[in-house]
Amino acid sequence: MSKKSRTKSSKTPSGSATAKKRPLKTRASTETKSAKTQRTPASKSTGSVAKAGSHKAASKQLNPSKSPSAPARSGLTEGHKAPAFRLPRDGGEVVTLADYAGQKLVLFFYPRADTPGCTREAIDFTRLAGAFAAAGTAVLGVSADPLKAQEKFRDKHALGVPLLSDAQHEMLEAYGAWGEKSMYGKSFLGILRTTILVGADGRVARIWRNVRVDGHADAVLEAARSL
Image (cartoon, rainbow, N blue to C red; front, side, top):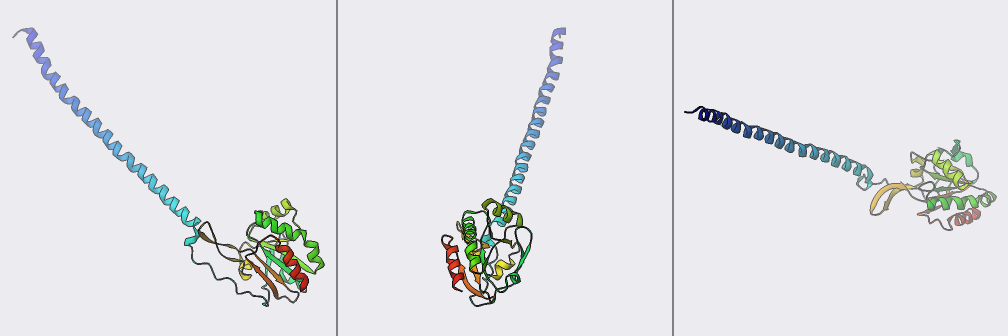
């Protein structure tokens, strides 16, 4: 065998060995990529599950229709003694029912400060404040808004009637102004627009429920004058 032939034959085995090693390396890298590809969707799906879970939790909190049934409305009716209350008002003072002993008192309960209907109602009672005073009748607005919101509401619209904050809904419930409401097909608990006229004897003289704002303050004034 010539020197040239021996050189070729010696290269052939090493070349074939190299050829065998290359597929192994390629296969190993392919398996690694495959493993990474399999792991990646798993981590993504875990994140999706976590997000879905948190979304459902938020939905439960924001969906009061699945809450327990609303408590029954207060049994307060005309002729009953007005329930006592003690609440803070705009400016920070504390107001009680006893402060108005011996005089007539209007309590108008509104759902939320600085919303269109509540603003019109509060402005109407402010407009008639002098006429109510002449009829020996005090006027108080009540909602669950915090004092800062009540004060902002007062200042923005130059309101002239005291605004009480019942954050715990105790007075609202006692006067039957807290209960189940519905909007856009969903049920929830909230303030029912209600007005109560208390006579000088401390008893409930008139109750207006599901109040329509237009002309309401004028109707309440006429009722107060007639007592």
